[in-house]
Image (cartoon, rainbow, N blue to C red; front, side, top):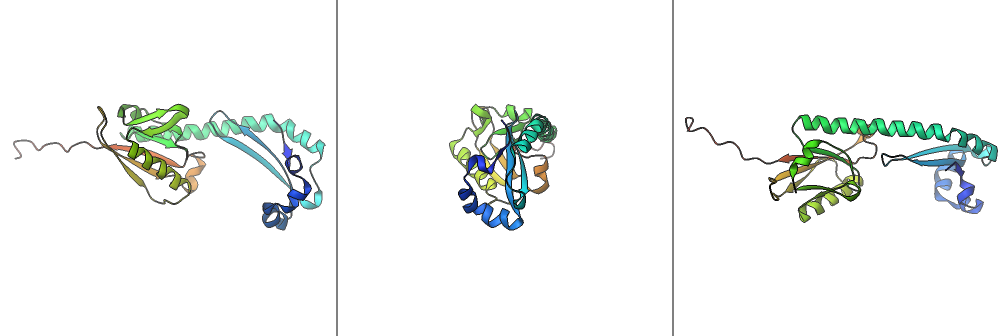
Length: 212
């Protein structure tokens, strides 16, 4: 629970042979790094990294102690930032709910980051299991969901992916749309790769007898 440097994890020979150092950092004049990683309750991992010019030499013990003194404040700032982004994600899914659309913000693993209450009305078709995992009752549809999230995370999909969700129990047939999160949308959805929006399929109303 503190700042560590390259030399805490690697020897000088390993650092000198590391491709990232050889190809990116050293050509830019960067020679040393001090970093810390802070897990926050939202499931995000806050990474704080300080780079130092190679000519200045490795980080001194006194400098690391100084950085450690700031770490609790940085942790609180990271937690607040993650919470604000989580609230933004919830606000977006709630807005879709007001439009009558069940929706959830999903991480690449299928973990639900945020959802609206309409998602709970789909009955057996959509399940949220252990570790907030988002699953479809139909094995075939669930496999397509997993594949779609993986492809979106690899950026193999630029457009919306749609998955047919068959009826199950009291649930009506539906279509699940996976909407990739791209570009500036990541300012809000930092740990989210896609929005899952469900469109239930309802039969068109019969024309009135007078009209016939």
